[in-house]
Image 1 (cartoon, one colour):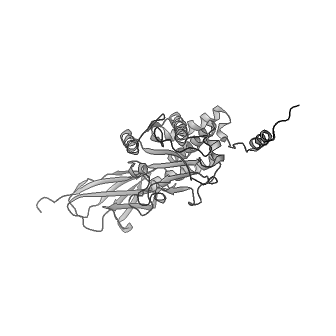
Image 2: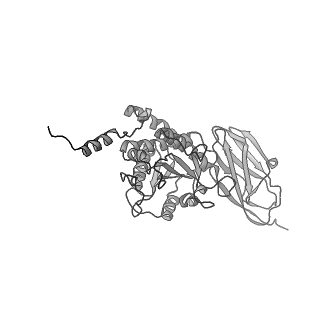
Image 3: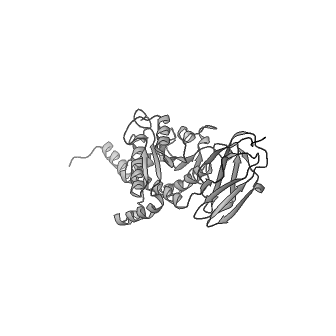
Length: 347
């Protein structure tokens, strides 16, 4: 018998002993019927919601390649985004996409398309990298700005937390140690600016970095179609649970053309889980109204919030900015309304 060359045997041994990509199929995937039942369950919450899904990169932007050149980030982003679209549409949601194939879409066009779509929520799909670091990998979900910054809104962080929890669980990986819960502010990367798509989004928005293609083990998992489906499933469930937990709705009942320099505002705030009365925040022209000037009245399972500013308002246009939170901890979507102070007749 002819002996195999030593180098061939060594190569075979090394490749044969390489760890196989490991992942866990979701429990809901044991049978097609069970998977369908989960999607049908969440349809009662997701039906009619509009989502804009943005697969990052693509077209002329294909420079992000896995450490062993098994995957291109742009392609994996698209695969995950398309699977996410399928899960959401099967649950009755309406989905818009920045791209459905390998095409070039500028950052400005992504935001423009999202705005014109009228979507309720913006989700950007990416995979992460640390050049020169082959060991690091984790899941992270990013929101815009930081608490205390005028561009920060807590609803973005709320959404990020739900997605991050279910994504990390689905992939069986942790979040970044730079964050307590795996969610991250985009100011960490670009101080005082953040990511373009999050900074300019006109609706609640997050950017998901599912895992790292610069880690060889994760790159091997990313090259498996079923694993891409699991990524999308984790994001889908996070979104669904976020909507399920309720998002308070705000309606301004008062007139927007007023004569008093210290007007009283009447708002209807409703949520099926109830409003957290300790977390009502009202600003006029970015000035926070003291809590002593805010009261709430329960009536027929909704709250009425009354606010009288403790300072005189000048004639002209002003902005009312309201944030409330429900008892599940979810904040309302951005609510800003202009109102006008005019001279009283005879003055």
